[in-house]
Length: 279
Length: 336
Ligand SMILES: Nc1ncnc2c1ncn2[C@@H]1O[C@H](COP(=O)(O)OP(=O)(O)O)[C@@H](O)[C@H]1O
Ligand SMILES: [Mg+2]
Image 1 (tube, each protein chain N blue to C red):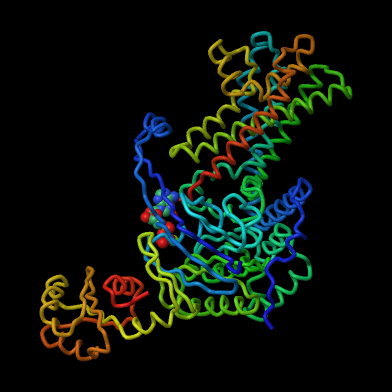
Image 2 (cartoon, each protein chain N blue to C red; image 1 turned 135 degrees about the vertical axis):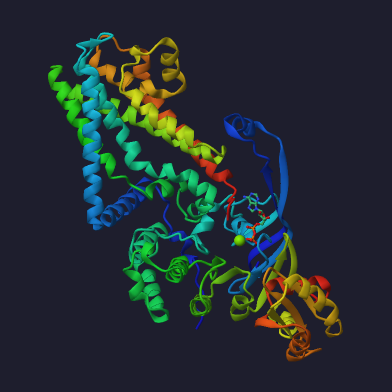
Protein backbone atom coordinates (compact mmCIF):
# COMPACT_ATOMS: atom_id res chain seq x y z
CA UNK A 1 0.00 0.00 0.00
CA UNK A 2 2.76 2.38 0.88
CA UNK A 3 4.51 3.61 -2.16
CA UNK A 4 8.04 3.66 -0.86
CA UNK A 5 9.91 5.73 -3.35
CA UNK A 6 12.05 8.78 -2.98
CA UNK A 7 14.56 8.66 -5.77
CA UNK A 8 15.85 5.18 -6.39
CA UNK A 9 15.90 6.56 -9.86
CA UNK A 10 18.82 8.76 -8.75
CA UNK A 11 20.86 7.38 -11.62
CA UNK A 12 18.31 8.69 -14.08
CA UNK A 13 19.20 12.27 -13.14
CA UNK A 14 21.28 13.56 -15.99
CA UNK A 15 24.26 15.78 -15.47
CA UNK A 16 23.13 19.34 -15.78
CA UNK A 17 25.22 20.81 -18.54
CA UNK A 18 25.08 23.79 -20.84
CA UNK A 19 22.19 22.39 -22.88
CA UNK A 20 20.16 21.84 -19.74
CA UNK A 21 20.77 25.39 -18.50
CA UNK A 22 20.10 27.01 -21.87
CA UNK A 23 16.81 25.15 -22.18
CA UNK A 24 15.71 26.10 -18.69
CA UNK A 25 16.80 29.69 -19.21
CA UNK A 26 14.69 30.16 -22.29
CA UNK A 27 11.70 28.56 -20.61
CA UNK A 28 12.01 30.88 -17.64
CA UNK A 29 12.37 34.07 -19.65
CA UNK A 30 9.60 33.04 -22.04
CA UNK A 31 7.32 32.72 -19.01
CA UNK A 32 8.59 35.96 -17.56
CA UNK A 33 8.00 37.95 -20.74
CA UNK A 34 4.59 36.38 -21.21
CA UNK A 35 3.54 37.40 -17.74
CA UNK A 36 4.91 40.92 -18.19
CA UNK A 37 2.99 41.35 -21.42
CA UNK A 38 -0.20 40.21 -19.77
CA UNK A 39 -0.05 43.47 -17.83
CA UNK A 40 -0.57 45.34 -21.07
CA UNK A 41 -0.82 48.93 -19.81
CA UNK A 42 2.34 48.45 -17.78
CA UNK A 43 4.12 47.03 -20.74
CA UNK A 44 3.14 49.85 -23.09
CA UNK A 45 4.02 52.57 -20.61
CA UNK A 46 7.40 51.11 -19.89
CA UNK A 47 8.08 50.71 -23.61
CA UNK A 48 7.31 54.41 -24.13
CA UNK A 49 9.55 55.14 -21.16
CA UNK A 50 12.45 53.26 -22.73
CA UNK A 51 12.09 55.08 -26.04
CA UNK A 52 11.87 58.47 -24.32
CA UNK A 53 14.93 57.82 -22.14
CA UNK A 54 16.98 56.76 -25.11
CA UNK A 55 15.93 59.73 -27.22
CA UNK A 56 16.77 62.06 -24.35
CA UNK A 57 20.19 60.46 -23.97
CA UNK A 58 20.78 60.77 -27.67
CA UNK A 59 19.78 64.44 -27.78
CA UNK A 60 22.08 65.19 -24.86
CA UNK A 61 24.84 63.49 -26.77
CA UNK A 62 24.25 65.58 -29.90
CA UNK A 63 24.12 68.82 -27.93
CA UNK A 64 27.36 67.98 -26.19
CA UNK A 65 29.38 66.78 -29.16
CA UNK A 66 27.60 68.23 -32.19
CA UNK A 67 29.36 71.58 -31.77
CA UNK A 68 32.87 70.20 -32.02
CA UNK A 69 34.19 68.87 -35.27
CA UNK A 70 36.59 66.77 -33.24
CA UNK A 71 37.81 66.16 -29.71
CA UNK A 72 41.39 65.12 -29.11
CA UNK A 73 41.56 63.82 -32.61
CA UNK A 74 38.24 61.95 -32.39
CA UNK A 75 35.65 62.99 -34.95
CA UNK A 76 31.98 63.40 -34.19
CA UNK A 77 31.05 60.14 -35.92
CA UNK A 78 33.79 58.23 -34.19
CA UNK A 79 32.38 59.34 -30.89
CA UNK A 80 28.92 58.37 -32.07
CA UNK A 81 30.37 54.99 -32.94
CA UNK A 82 31.64 54.61 -29.38
CA UNK A 83 28.29 55.76 -28.06
CA UNK A 84 26.43 53.09 -30.04
CA UNK A 85 29.05 50.54 -29.14
CA UNK A 86 28.66 51.16 -25.42
CA UNK A 87 24.86 51.02 -25.63
CA UNK A 88 25.08 47.59 -27.24
CA UNK A 89 27.68 46.26 -24.86
CA UNK A 90 25.65 47.26 -21.80
CA UNK A 91 22.65 45.30 -23.07
CA UNK A 92 23.59 41.82 -21.80
CA UNK A 93 24.28 43.24 -18.35
CA UNK A 94 20.99 45.04 -18.28
CA UNK A 95 18.89 42.19 -19.68
CA UNK A 96 20.52 39.20 -18.06
CA UNK A 97 21.91 40.42 -14.76
CA UNK A 98 19.17 42.80 -13.69
CA UNK A 99 18.31 40.72 -10.64
CA UNK A 100 21.75 41.55 -9.24
CA UNK A 101 20.32 44.94 -8.32
CA UNK A 102 18.09 43.24 -5.76
CA UNK A 103 20.78 40.94 -4.39
CA UNK A 104 21.60 43.17 -1.47
CA UNK A 105 17.97 43.27 -0.38
CA UNK A 106 17.60 39.48 -0.68
CA UNK A 107 20.74 38.94 1.35
CA UNK A 108 19.76 41.30 4.17
CA UNK A 109 16.14 40.22 4.39
CA UNK A 110 17.27 36.61 4.55
CA UNK A 111 15.27 35.85 1.41
CA UNK A 112 18.39 34.80 -0.43
CA UNK A 113 18.15 31.44 1.30
CA UNK A 114 15.42 30.36 -1.09
CA UNK A 115 17.88 30.21 -3.97
CA UNK A 116 19.97 27.66 -2.15
CA UNK A 117 17.51 24.77 -2.16
CA UNK A 118 17.44 23.79 -5.82
CA UNK A 119 19.70 21.19 -7.43
CA UNK A 120 21.03 23.74 -9.89
CA UNK A 121 23.71 26.40 -9.97
CA UNK A 122 22.83 29.16 -7.49
CA UNK A 123 24.11 32.04 -9.62
CA UNK A 124 22.23 30.80 -12.65
CA UNK A 125 19.06 30.26 -10.67
CA UNK A 126 19.32 33.71 -9.17
CA UNK A 127 19.98 35.74 -12.31
CA UNK A 128 17.56 33.74 -14.44
CA UNK A 129 14.68 34.94 -12.33
CA UNK A 130 14.52 38.36 -13.96
CA UNK A 131 14.97 39.28 -17.59
CA UNK A 132 14.82 43.02 -18.15
CA UNK A 133 13.08 43.67 -21.46
CA UNK A 134 13.99 47.36 -21.25
CA UNK A 135 17.53 46.50 -22.23
CA UNK A 136 16.31 45.45 -25.65
CA UNK A 137 15.11 48.99 -26.46
CA UNK A 138 18.57 50.24 -25.73
CA UNK A 139 20.01 47.58 -27.98
CA UNK A 140 17.95 48.88 -30.90
CA UNK A 141 19.21 52.44 -30.34
CA UNK A 142 22.77 51.23 -29.96
CA UNK A 143 22.67 49.27 -33.19
CA UNK A 144 21.08 52.27 -34.94
CA UNK A 145 23.83 54.64 -33.76
CA UNK A 146 26.59 52.18 -34.57
CA UNK A 147 25.34 51.42 -38.08
CA UNK A 148 24.80 55.11 -38.84
CA UNK A 149 28.31 56.01 -37.67
CA UNK A 150 29.72 53.05 -39.58
CA UNK A 151 28.18 54.38 -42.80
CA UNK A 152 29.20 57.99 -42.15
CA UNK A 153 32.76 56.93 -41.40
CA UNK A 154 32.75 55.02 -44.68
CA UNK A 155 34.04 51.87 -43.03
CA UNK A 156 33.74 49.03 -45.58
CA UNK A 157 31.23 46.27 -44.92
CA UNK A 158 33.53 43.27 -44.91
CA UNK A 159 33.16 39.87 -43.35
CA UNK A 160 36.36 40.20 -41.34
CA UNK A 161 35.38 43.60 -39.97
CA UNK A 162 31.95 42.33 -38.97
CA UNK A 163 33.54 39.41 -37.15
CA UNK A 164 35.90 41.81 -35.43
CA UNK A 165 33.13 44.10 -34.25
CA UNK A 166 31.17 41.12 -32.92
CA UNK A 167 34.17 39.85 -30.96
CA UNK A 168 34.79 43.39 -29.74
CA UNK A 169 31.16 43.73 -28.60
CA UNK A 170 31.21 40.39 -26.80
CA UNK A 171 34.45 41.38 -25.10
CA UNK A 172 33.07 44.70 -23.94
CA UNK A 173 29.88 43.02 -22.70
CA UNK A 174 31.90 40.57 -20.66
CA UNK A 175 33.70 43.44 -18.94
CA UNK A 176 30.42 45.18 -18.20
CA UNK A 177 28.90 42.02 -16.79
CA UNK A 178 32.01 41.28 -14.76
CA UNK A 179 31.99 44.71 -13.17
CA UNK A 180 28.30 44.63 -12.26
CA UNK A 181 28.47 41.04 -11.06
CA UNK A 182 31.42 41.71 -8.81
CA UNK A 183 29.91 44.93 -7.48
CA UNK A 184 26.69 43.07 -6.64
CA UNK A 185 28.59 40.21 -5.00
CA UNK A 186 30.27 42.65 -2.63
CA UNK A 187 27.07 42.66 -0.56
CA UNK A 188 27.98 39.21 0.74
CA UNK A 189 30.88 40.86 2.57
CA UNK A 190 30.05 44.50 2.99
CA UNK A 191 26.87 45.76 4.55
CA UNK A 192 26.43 49.09 2.78
CA UNK A 193 27.52 48.03 -0.63
CA UNK A 194 24.95 49.79 -2.75
CA UNK A 195 27.34 52.57 -3.69
CA UNK A 196 29.57 50.00 -5.37
CA UNK A 197 26.77 48.88 -7.68
CA UNK A 198 25.89 52.48 -8.26
CA UNK A 199 29.46 53.29 -9.25
CA UNK A 200 29.52 50.29 -11.57
CA UNK A 201 26.47 51.72 -13.31
CA UNK A 202 27.99 55.18 -13.60
CA UNK A 203 31.14 53.67 -15.08
CA UNK A 204 29.26 52.68 -18.16
CA UNK A 205 28.58 56.39 -18.76
CA UNK A 206 32.31 57.01 -19.00
CA UNK A 207 32.75 54.01 -21.23
CA UNK A 208 31.36 55.83 -24.22
CA UNK A 209 34.17 58.42 -24.34
CA UNK A 210 37.56 57.84 -25.88
CA UNK A 211 39.91 57.22 -23.00
CA UNK A 212 42.35 59.77 -24.36
CA UNK A 213 40.10 62.65 -23.31
CA UNK A 214 40.76 61.87 -19.64
CA UNK A 215 43.88 62.85 -17.75
CA UNK A 216 46.57 60.33 -16.89
CA UNK A 217 45.21 59.44 -13.47
CA UNK A 218 41.77 58.53 -14.78
CA UNK A 219 43.28 56.81 -17.76
CA UNK A 220 45.25 54.59 -15.41
CA UNK A 221 42.24 53.88 -13.20
CA UNK A 222 39.94 53.15 -16.13
CA UNK A 223 42.43 50.78 -17.67
CA UNK A 224 43.92 48.89 -14.79
CA UNK A 225 41.54 49.21 -11.85
CA UNK A 226 38.05 49.62 -13.21
CA UNK A 227 37.88 48.14 -16.67
CA UNK A 228 35.95 51.08 -18.13
CA UNK A 229 38.28 51.47 -21.08
CA UNK A 230 37.56 47.89 -22.05
CA UNK A 231 33.84 48.48 -22.29
CA UNK A 232 34.03 50.35 -25.57
CA UNK A 233 37.31 52.08 -26.17
CA UNK A 234 39.94 49.35 -26.48
CA UNK A 235 37.72 46.86 -28.31
CA UNK A 236 36.50 49.43 -30.84
CA UNK A 237 40.00 50.56 -31.74
CA UNK A 238 40.12 47.46 -33.93
CA UNK A 239 37.63 49.16 -36.23
CA UNK A 240 38.37 52.84 -35.68
CA UNK A 241 42.19 52.79 -35.55
CA UNK A 242 43.11 49.59 -37.37
CA UNK A 243 46.68 50.78 -38.02
CA UNK A 244 47.39 51.58 -34.44
CA UNK A 245 45.92 48.87 -32.23
CA UNK A 246 47.53 48.63 -28.78
CA UNK A 247 48.42 45.29 -27.21
CA UNK A 248 45.66 45.72 -24.66
CA UNK A 249 43.08 45.51 -27.42
CA UNK A 250 44.36 42.17 -28.65
CA UNK A 251 44.44 40.89 -25.10
CA UNK A 252 41.00 42.18 -24.25
CA UNK A 253 38.92 39.13 -25.31
CA UNK A 254 40.97 36.90 -23.05
CA UNK A 255 40.90 39.46 -20.26
CA UNK A 256 37.13 39.79 -20.72
CA UNK A 257 36.55 36.07 -20.26
CA UNK A 258 38.90 36.05 -17.27
CA UNK A 259 37.21 39.06 -15.68
CA UNK A 260 33.77 37.56 -16.11
CA UNK A 261 34.84 34.19 -14.78
CA UNK A 262 36.51 35.88 -11.83
CA UNK A 263 33.38 37.85 -11.01
CA UNK A 264 31.30 34.67 -11.21
CA UNK A 265 33.68 32.88 -8.86
CA UNK A 266 33.52 35.81 -6.46
CA UNK A 267 29.74 35.75 -6.52
CA UNK A 268 29.66 31.99 -5.87
CA UNK A 269 32.15 32.33 -3.05
CA UNK A 270 29.94 34.96 -1.46
CA UNK A 271 26.88 32.76 -1.86
CA UNK A 272 28.60 29.82 -0.20
CA UNK A 273 29.60 31.88 2.80
CA UNK A 274 26.14 33.39 3.01
CA UNK A 275 25.02 32.57 6.52
CA UNK A 276 21.29 32.91 6.17
CA UNK A 277 20.95 35.83 8.51
CA UNK A 278 17.67 37.60 8.86
CA UNK A 279 15.35 34.61 8.98
CA UNK B 1 22.06 2.09 8.12
CA UNK B 2 18.39 2.88 8.37
CA UNK B 3 18.51 6.49 9.37
CA UNK B 4 17.68 9.05 6.74
CA UNK B 5 18.91 11.83 9.01
CA UNK B 6 21.75 11.63 11.52
CA UNK B 7 23.14 14.44 13.60
CA UNK B 8 25.99 13.82 15.98
CA UNK B 9 27.27 16.59 18.26
CA UNK B 10 26.23 19.20 15.76
CA UNK B 11 27.06 22.74 16.75
CA UNK B 12 26.65 25.97 14.84
CA UNK B 13 28.24 29.20 15.89
CA UNK B 14 27.82 32.52 14.16
CA UNK B 15 30.48 35.16 14.25
CA UNK B 16 28.64 38.42 14.57
CA UNK B 17 30.65 41.46 13.68
CA UNK B 18 30.39 44.53 15.86
CA UNK B 19 29.72 46.85 12.96
CA UNK B 20 31.03 50.34 12.42
CA UNK B 21 29.32 53.28 10.81
CA UNK B 22 29.99 54.95 7.49
CA UNK B 23 32.32 54.27 4.61
CA UNK B 24 35.39 54.15 6.81
CA UNK B 25 33.70 51.76 9.19
CA UNK B 26 32.65 49.66 6.27
CA UNK B 27 36.22 49.18 5.15
CA UNK B 28 37.31 48.62 8.74
CA UNK B 29 34.67 45.88 9.05
CA UNK B 30 36.26 43.98 6.19
CA UNK B 31 39.39 43.41 8.24
CA UNK B 32 37.94 43.66 11.71
CA UNK B 33 38.41 40.95 14.32
CA UNK B 34 35.92 42.51 16.64
CA UNK B 35 33.57 39.51 16.77
CA UNK B 36 30.95 38.22 19.12
CA UNK B 37 30.23 34.48 18.96
CA UNK B 38 26.58 33.38 18.97
CA UNK B 39 26.07 29.69 19.54
CA UNK B 40 22.77 29.04 17.75
CA UNK B 41 22.86 25.24 17.90
CA UNK B 42 24.70 23.51 20.69
CA UNK B 43 25.83 19.91 20.45
CA UNK B 44 22.69 18.30 19.08
CA UNK B 45 22.16 14.59 18.44
CA UNK B 46 19.26 13.39 16.36
CA UNK B 47 18.36 10.28 14.40
CA UNK B 48 15.36 10.04 12.12
CA UNK B 49 14.12 7.05 10.15
CA UNK B 50 12.39 7.16 6.77
CA UNK B 51 8.72 8.08 6.94
CA UNK B 52 8.67 9.75 10.35
CA UNK B 53 7.10 13.12 10.96
CA UNK B 54 9.18 14.96 13.52
CA UNK B 55 7.76 17.96 15.29
CA UNK B 56 10.64 20.31 15.92
CA UNK B 57 9.54 22.72 18.60
CA UNK B 58 11.11 25.68 20.28
CA UNK B 59 10.63 29.35 20.99
CA UNK B 60 11.75 32.09 18.65
CA UNK B 61 15.50 32.09 18.38
CA UNK B 62 15.84 28.56 19.74
CA UNK B 63 17.84 27.40 16.73
CA UNK B 64 15.22 25.55 14.66
CA UNK B 65 15.82 27.35 11.38
CA UNK B 66 19.57 27.14 11.80
CA UNK B 67 19.34 23.38 12.24
CA UNK B 68 17.18 23.11 9.12
CA UNK B 69 19.60 25.25 7.13
CA UNK B 70 22.39 22.87 8.09
CA UNK B 71 20.34 19.84 7.09
CA UNK B 72 19.51 21.42 3.74
CA UNK B 73 23.15 22.22 3.00
CA UNK B 74 22.88 26.01 3.15
CA UNK B 75 25.00 26.26 6.29
CA UNK B 76 28.04 24.29 7.31
CA UNK B 77 28.07 23.03 10.91
CA UNK B 78 30.84 24.56 13.01
CA UNK B 79 31.50 21.09 14.39
CA UNK B 80 29.94 17.66 14.55
CA UNK B 81 28.67 15.22 11.94
CA UNK B 82 25.55 15.70 9.93
CA UNK B 83 24.42 13.11 7.39
CA UNK B 84 21.27 13.29 5.28
CA UNK B 85 20.51 10.36 3.06
CA UNK B 86 24.13 9.15 3.32
CA UNK B 87 25.49 12.51 2.21
CA UNK B 88 27.05 15.52 3.83
CA UNK B 89 24.62 18.21 2.71
CA UNK B 90 26.99 21.16 2.77
CA UNK B 91 29.67 19.57 0.60
CA UNK B 92 27.14 17.90 -1.68
CA UNK B 93 24.50 20.59 -1.82
CA UNK B 94 23.26 20.00 -5.36
CA UNK B 95 22.82 16.25 -4.99
CA UNK B 96 21.25 16.72 -1.58
CA UNK B 97 18.78 19.24 -3.00
CA UNK B 98 17.58 16.72 -5.55
CA UNK B 99 16.21 14.54 -2.77
CA UNK B 100 14.84 17.05 -0.34
CA UNK B 101 12.03 19.58 -0.41
CA UNK B 102 12.01 22.77 1.62
CA UNK B 103 9.35 25.27 2.62
CA UNK B 104 10.17 28.32 4.66
CA UNK B 105 6.88 29.76 5.91
CA UNK B 106 6.05 33.16 4.40
CA UNK B 107 8.95 33.09 1.93
CA UNK B 108 7.65 31.57 -1.25
CA UNK B 109 10.09 29.79 -3.51
CA UNK B 110 7.74 29.83 -6.46
CA UNK B 111 8.16 32.25 -9.34
CA UNK B 112 6.27 35.25 -8.12
CA UNK B 113 4.65 36.34 -11.37
CA UNK B 114 3.89 32.91 -12.83
CA UNK B 115 0.73 30.85 -12.49
CA UNK B 116 1.38 27.85 -10.27
CA UNK B 117 1.20 25.37 -13.13
CA UNK B 118 4.08 27.15 -14.91
CA UNK B 119 6.17 26.99 -11.75
CA UNK B 120 5.41 23.28 -11.59
CA UNK B 121 6.55 22.81 -15.19
CA UNK B 122 9.82 24.61 -14.49
CA UNK B 123 10.34 22.47 -11.41
CA UNK B 124 9.64 19.41 -13.52
CA UNK B 125 12.55 20.41 -15.77
CA UNK B 126 14.85 21.46 -12.95
CA UNK B 127 14.36 18.23 -11.00
CA UNK B 128 14.12 16.16 -14.19
CA UNK B 129 10.83 14.59 -13.17
CA UNK B 130 9.51 12.08 -15.71
CA UNK B 131 6.15 12.78 -17.39
CA UNK B 132 4.72 9.71 -15.72
CA UNK B 133 5.73 10.71 -12.19
CA UNK B 134 4.70 14.30 -12.78
CA UNK B 135 1.21 13.40 -13.96
CA UNK B 136 0.76 10.91 -11.17
CA UNK B 137 1.69 13.57 -8.65
CA UNK B 138 -0.72 16.13 -10.10
CA UNK B 139 -3.47 13.53 -10.00
CA UNK B 140 -2.68 12.83 -6.37
CA UNK B 141 -2.78 16.56 -5.59
CA UNK B 142 -6.12 16.79 -7.37
CA UNK B 143 -7.53 14.19 -5.00
CA UNK B 144 -6.31 16.12 -1.94
CA UNK B 145 -6.94 19.80 -2.58
CA UNK B 146 -8.90 21.97 -4.96
CA UNK B 147 -5.97 22.18 -7.31
CA UNK B 148 -7.75 23.71 -10.29
CA UNK B 149 -8.32 27.07 -8.62
CA UNK B 150 -4.65 27.20 -7.66
CA UNK B 151 -2.99 26.05 -10.86
CA UNK B 152 -3.91 29.01 -13.02
CA UNK B 153 -3.45 31.72 -10.49
CA UNK B 154 -0.24 33.76 -10.45
CA UNK B 155 1.50 33.28 -7.12
CA UNK B 156 1.50 37.03 -6.45
CA UNK B 157 -2.30 37.03 -6.44
CA UNK B 158 -2.60 34.23 -3.91
CA UNK B 159 -3.51 34.63 -0.28
CA UNK B 160 -0.87 33.63 2.25
CA UNK B 161 -2.71 30.37 2.87
CA UNK B 162 -2.96 29.48 -0.81
CA UNK B 163 0.69 30.34 -1.27
CA UNK B 164 1.79 28.15 1.60
CA UNK B 165 -0.35 25.33 0.25
CA UNK B 166 1.24 25.78 -3.18
CA UNK B 167 4.71 25.88 -1.71
CA UNK B 168 4.08 22.63 0.10
CA UNK B 169 2.79 20.98 -3.08
CA UNK B 170 5.85 22.25 -4.93
CA UNK B 171 8.15 20.86 -2.23
CA UNK B 172 6.70 17.35 -2.63
CA UNK B 173 6.52 17.48 -6.44
CA UNK B 174 9.79 15.65 -7.17
CA UNK B 175 8.95 13.03 -4.56
CA UNK B 176 11.83 13.83 -2.22
CA UNK B 177 12.88 11.59 0.62
CA UNK B 178 12.74 14.35 3.18
CA UNK B 179 10.67 17.51 3.31
CA UNK B 180 11.60 20.32 5.68
CA UNK B 181 8.79 22.62 6.66
CA UNK B 182 9.91 25.63 8.66
CA UNK B 183 6.92 27.21 10.38
CA UNK B 184 4.52 26.44 7.53
CA UNK B 185 1.45 27.50 9.47
CA UNK B 186 2.75 30.80 10.78
CA UNK B 187 0.27 33.63 10.22
CA UNK B 188 -2.55 31.37 8.99
CA UNK B 189 -6.09 31.18 10.30
CA UNK B 190 -7.42 28.09 12.03
CA UNK B 191 -9.22 26.65 8.99
CA UNK B 192 -6.18 26.98 6.74
CA UNK B 193 -3.94 25.55 9.44
CA UNK B 194 -6.00 22.42 9.66
CA UNK B 195 -6.18 22.09 5.87
CA UNK B 196 -2.41 22.27 5.66
CA UNK B 197 -1.96 19.79 8.47
CA UNK B 198 -4.23 17.32 6.69
CA UNK B 199 -2.31 17.75 3.45
CA UNK B 200 1.05 17.13 5.10
CA UNK B 201 -0.23 14.05 6.88
CA UNK B 202 -1.73 12.60 3.70
CA UNK B 203 1.39 13.21 1.62
CA UNK B 204 3.51 11.61 4.32
CA UNK B 205 1.27 8.54 4.34
CA UNK B 206 1.02 8.17 0.56
CA UNK B 207 4.68 8.75 -0.24
CA UNK B 208 6.32 7.68 3.01
CA UNK B 209 8.15 11.01 2.96
CA UNK B 210 10.07 11.95 6.06
CA UNK B 211 8.83 15.31 7.32
CA UNK B 212 10.68 17.65 9.63
CA UNK B 213 8.25 20.28 10.79
CA UNK B 214 9.24 23.22 12.91
CA UNK B 215 6.68 25.25 14.72
CA UNK B 216 6.04 27.09 17.89
CA UNK B 217 2.43 26.05 17.73
CA UNK B 218 1.70 22.98 19.88
CA UNK B 219 -1.40 22.44 17.77
CA UNK B 220 0.58 21.63 14.60
CA UNK B 221 2.68 19.12 16.38
CA UNK B 222 -0.26 17.63 18.19
CA UNK B 223 -2.10 17.01 14.93
CA UNK B 224 0.81 15.57 12.96
CA UNK B 225 3.62 14.06 14.93
CA UNK B 226 4.17 10.94 16.94
CA UNK B 227 7.53 12.19 18.01
CA UNK B 228 8.59 15.62 19.10
CA UNK B 229 11.95 17.21 19.57
CA UNK B 230 12.19 20.37 21.63
CA UNK B 231 15.12 22.69 21.34
CA UNK B 232 15.79 25.61 23.63
CA UNK B 233 18.60 28.14 23.29
CA UNK B 234 20.33 25.76 20.92
CA UNK B 235 20.16 22.79 23.28
CA UNK B 236 18.17 19.63 22.78
CA UNK B 237 15.72 19.64 25.62
CA UNK B 238 13.41 16.80 24.81
CA UNK B 239 13.16 14.01 22.26
CA UNK B 240 10.38 11.52 22.77
CA UNK B 241 6.92 10.28 21.82
CA UNK B 242 4.32 12.99 21.90
CA UNK B 243 2.00 10.81 24.01
CA UNK B 244 4.59 10.90 26.74
CA UNK B 245 4.48 14.68 26.81
CA UNK B 246 0.76 14.93 26.26
CA UNK B 247 0.28 13.13 29.50
CA UNK B 248 1.68 16.25 31.10
CA UNK B 249 0.60 19.16 29.01
CA UNK B 250 -2.87 17.70 28.56
CA UNK B 251 -3.63 18.44 32.18
CA UNK B 252 -2.35 21.98 32.15
CA UNK B 253 -4.37 24.87 30.86
CA UNK B 254 -3.89 28.59 30.92
CA UNK B 255 -6.52 30.94 32.25
CA UNK B 256 -6.04 34.42 30.87
CA UNK B 257 -7.77 37.35 32.47
CA UNK B 258 -7.93 41.09 31.90
CA UNK B 259 -8.53 42.94 35.15
CA UNK B 260 -10.22 46.32 35.39
CA UNK B 261 -7.47 47.69 37.59
CA UNK B 262 -3.76 47.95 36.96
CA UNK B 263 -2.45 44.69 35.52
CA UNK B 264 0.84 44.61 37.37
CA UNK B 265 -0.67 45.36 40.74
CA UNK B 266 -3.38 42.74 40.33
CA UNK B 267 -0.85 40.17 39.14
CA UNK B 268 1.29 40.79 42.21
CA UNK B 269 -1.69 40.50 44.52
CA UNK B 270 -2.85 37.29 42.85
CA UNK B 271 0.52 35.66 43.46
CA UNK B 272 -0.29 35.78 47.19
CA UNK B 273 -4.02 35.24 46.94
CA UNK B 274 -3.76 32.14 44.74
CA UNK B 275 -0.84 30.67 46.62
CA UNK B 276 -2.84 27.66 47.75
CA UNK B 277 -3.73 26.68 44.16
CA UNK B 278 -0.08 26.10 43.19
CA UNK B 279 -0.45 28.04 39.96
CA UNK B 280 2.20 30.03 38.14
CA UNK B 281 1.34 33.57 37.17
CA UNK B 282 2.80 35.76 34.43
CA UNK B 283 1.57 38.94 32.80
CA UNK B 284 2.08 41.25 29.85
CA UNK B 285 0.64 44.76 29.40
CA UNK B 286 -3.00 43.71 29.25
CA UNK B 287 -3.34 40.06 30.22
CA UNK B 288 -2.54 38.00 33.29
CA UNK B 289 -1.86 34.32 32.54
CA UNK B 290 -2.50 31.72 35.22
CA UNK B 291 -1.22 28.23 34.47
CA UNK B 292 -3.42 25.70 36.23
CA UNK B 293 -2.77 22.01 36.77
CA UNK B 294 -6.24 20.61 36.41
CA UNK B 295 -5.38 17.47 38.27
CA UNK B 296 -4.89 19.54 41.37
CA UNK B 297 -7.43 22.31 40.93
CA UNK B 298 -10.39 23.00 38.71
CA UNK B 299 -10.08 26.05 36.51
CA UNK B 300 -13.50 27.31 37.59
CA UNK B 301 -12.41 27.28 41.21
CA UNK B 302 -9.42 29.44 40.35
CA UNK B 303 -11.58 31.83 38.37
CA UNK B 304 -14.03 32.15 41.24
CA UNK B 305 -11.21 32.93 43.59
CA UNK B 306 -9.97 35.66 41.32
CA UNK B 307 -13.39 37.18 40.91
CA UNK B 308 -13.93 37.36 44.63
CA UNK B 309 -11.34 40.11 44.97
CA UNK B 310 -10.94 41.57 41.44
CA UNK B 311 -13.24 42.87 38.73
CA UNK B 312 -12.56 41.16 35.35
CA UNK B 313 -13.07 42.79 31.95
CA UNK B 314 -12.36 39.77 29.80
CA UNK B 315 -11.14 36.19 30.01
CA UNK B 316 -9.82 33.38 27.80
CA UNK B 317 -8.99 29.71 28.22
CA UNK B 318 -5.91 28.45 26.39
CA UNK B 319 -4.25 25.14 25.78
CA UNK B 320 -0.74 25.14 27.14
CA UNK B 321 1.76 27.02 24.94
CA UNK B 322 5.19 25.86 23.82
CA UNK B 323 6.74 28.33 26.21
CA UNK B 324 4.87 26.77 29.10
CA UNK B 325 5.82 23.24 28.06
CA UNK B 326 9.46 24.26 27.97
CA UNK B 327 9.13 25.88 31.37
CA UNK B 328 7.56 22.73 32.78
CA UNK B 329 10.36 20.59 31.37
CA UNK B 330 12.92 22.85 33.01
CA UNK B 331 11.05 22.68 36.28
CA UNK B 332 11.31 18.91 36.11
CA UNK B 333 7.62 18.23 35.66
CA UNK B 334 8.26 16.20 32.53
CA UNK B 335 11.02 13.69 32.15
CA UNK B 336 12.64 12.93 28.82
N1 LIG C 1 23.11 34.34 10.17
C1 LIG C 1 23.11 34.56 11.48
N2 LIG C 1 24.01 35.35 12.02
C2 LIG C 1 24.04 35.57 13.35
N3 LIG C 1 23.17 35.04 14.22
C3 LIG C 1 22.22 34.23 13.73
C4 LIG C 1 22.13 33.95 12.34
N4 LIG C 1 21.08 33.11 12.13
C5 LIG C 1 20.55 32.89 13.35
N5 LIG C 1 21.21 33.55 14.30
C6 LIG C 1 20.93 33.51 15.76
O1 LIG C 1 20.87 32.17 16.16
C7 LIG C 1 19.78 31.93 17.03
C8 LIG C 1 18.85 30.89 16.46
O2 LIG C 1 18.12 31.42 15.36
P1 LIG C 1 17.10 30.57 14.51
O3 LIG C 1 17.73 29.28 14.14
O4 LIG C 1 16.61 31.42 13.41
O5 LIG C 1 15.93 30.30 15.56
P2 LIG C 1 14.44 29.78 15.35
O6 LIG C 1 14.27 29.36 13.94
O7 LIG C 1 14.28 28.67 16.33
O8 LIG C 1 13.56 30.93 15.71
C9 LIG C 1 19.14 33.28 17.27
O9 LIG C 1 19.69 33.82 18.43
C10 LIG C 1 19.57 34.08 16.07
O10 LIG C 1 19.65 35.44 16.38
MG1 LIG D 1 12.91 30.12 12.55
